[in-house]
Amino acid sequence: MSLDLLAGTVHAALTLPPARPTILVFDSGLGGLTVLAQASRARPDARFVYAADDAGFPYGRLDEAQLVARVLAVMERLVARCRPDLVVIACNTASTLVLPALRARFAIPFIGTVPAIKPAAELTRSGLISVLATPGTVARDYTRELIASYAAGCEVTLVGSSRLAGLAEAVLRGEPVDDGAIAAEIAPCFVEAGGARTDVITLACTHYPLLLERMKRLAPWDVTWIDPAPAIARRMTQLLGQAPPARAPASDAPAIFTGGAGMTGPLRIALAGLGLAEVMVEPMPLAN
Ligand code: DGL
Image: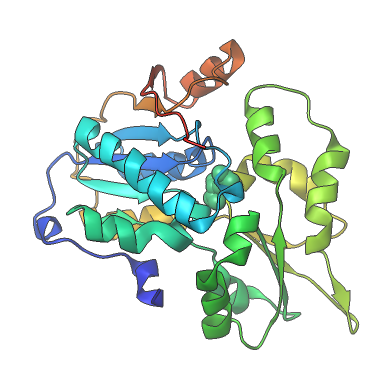
């Protein structure tokens, strides 16, 4: 996969972006809400739809062939239902693998979310950076290529957490999550070597910024944490343009889930607080 995928492919339709575009923000679960928040701030006039493939969550555990097939199948259904002008894949685990197949299949522009390794390499002073991601993202060739291209002069520690995305979802559902569980997942990111310490951690899973305040509190020392969401929103406005002046904000975004099993009362309240009052289920069980 070539690194220009990071920049996205501009489909011809975007030479004249629609006046009030429909933007589909997609993730395996609730992590994409961190991207939706930034994207809707950048284009408050656009119609957003949030889609979570919660029946497939967590994507970090799926093998590559399974994940490509799953995302294509779910996207087929979502594109038919929502007719988006642009899709944001707010999931590193999917973006680092599935973007070429999505772009080959659909004539819509896709913006991906991939590990912010270049900004981390530019920010570090110690030369020690960590990438906190899912096991899937850590294993990708794409992630290794980003490191080779942009962080060859750094010591990069790849940390694949199989628990953190689930813990972030539990927090959003209002369930108690132990500090110890979060601390254990982030601990491998903090490296001391040759008198230097990790000073930049890139959050390469969109779920993790949901835990950012707790991670900062539990960190053994201060580091710069990189949340990719503002860069994704910037990329979106590059493709679509800025919101026209004096345009009324669009109404609340609907949310579509492929399972809905974890849709508790507290989660509905949390989603409504994030502007997602209308929650729908488009059942798509994950075939085993
Ligand atoms: N939010 C997703 C990401 O950015 C991953 C969570 C999962 O494993 O499904 O990678």
